[in-house]
Length: 351
Ligand code: BGC
Image (cartoon, rainbow, N blue to C red):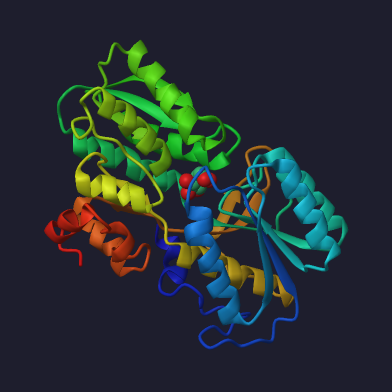
């Protein structure tokens, strides 16, 4: 936990050597390419990461290009090829699966382009650095958050996990299980991974798990806000929304609104400003041929490689702390408090 300290103070200036942070030192003579994964598995990529990355690169005065692969690994490969052809010196990807990610990184390496894993570790990959949050801790916060909402009584839990091709999803589930499995009053009555984090498919999957459990579901460990929203929609149809606690992640507008409305028990906030700032700092170090400041290493479970990492600290958010996300700039009050949510925001002291 303490390891993230050096980076948690300010998004774009870690006190490190390469970026002189603050007011746009523009000595970095390279170009950074970033490929985001999709627009559907979470709204975060376009609504939070892109603007935060743009701001971080602008502030650092480094040339950059950001593209989105729209959920298509072939498209990500093509974008990478084009970026390499256009002379990027550093390429950061959020892989859609480790195999395609590793192939992209290998090609980049043979063209002399350094790579960074942004948010998701590419198993078997060759990235110079991995920039993310501590994803096991994300899962632990979800598990503890669900336990806090459920309380001491016996409860049946359904797990709606993230994509099986996303190493983060494995880590989230691992973290959540590490907390909940030790609590003897809870039973797992269903658990499934949602391919590509597809929110629509998540509703279908949750409906099936719910039916298989004869509707005897007391809590839902959903891996992100989109999957949580899918579970809530099915619970709503059964008159149970607000009675069965559901977790989430990303502190999306919808997730925060669900928390204010009482249909979602918690979310996990991962500041895009911090993550994008850490990526910019790392990329600039690479551009300048310097070592980036890391918080430790992460084991690539496929290759056994210890990947130099910058892992930030995620934060659990409940109704009491929705205001913190807004104060931190994670979402705007205007978005969260739109329309019917104005009253709920006022009650929660958000203006
Ligand atoms: C990210 C989450 C996101 C999910 C779906 C994960 O790898 O860490 O923040 O909700 O992918 O895009």
